[in-house]
Length: 110
Image (tube, rainbow, N blue to C red; front, side, top):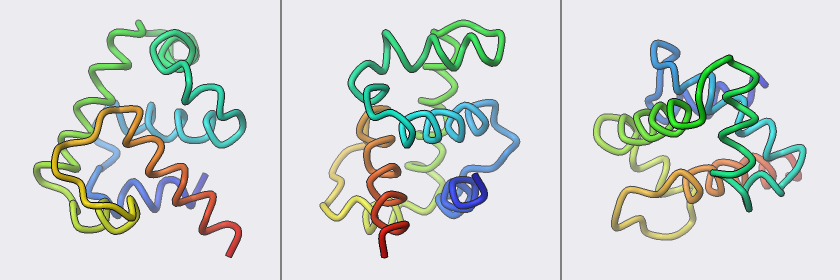
């Protein structure tokens, strides 16, 4: 979990955002079971919402907020570097999670 939090903070997303803890949890879930990446709206958001006693739409909004923070005011160059392809537009939640999970999986293999 420490590696996940370090990566998120390196992207310019602080713990003052509600989406921060949702993002940490989402990444840990996806690292355990990649099926969550295939069912973000139907599986991932409801699981996070259930854990944190909120609604799936709130989870979706808060995750979009932290992605926007990273894109607008955060470390976009780091995000592009770990994506390993040019990012012309702000990534969707699924793309963002895929980039971070791919990076964490690759860095743990090295």
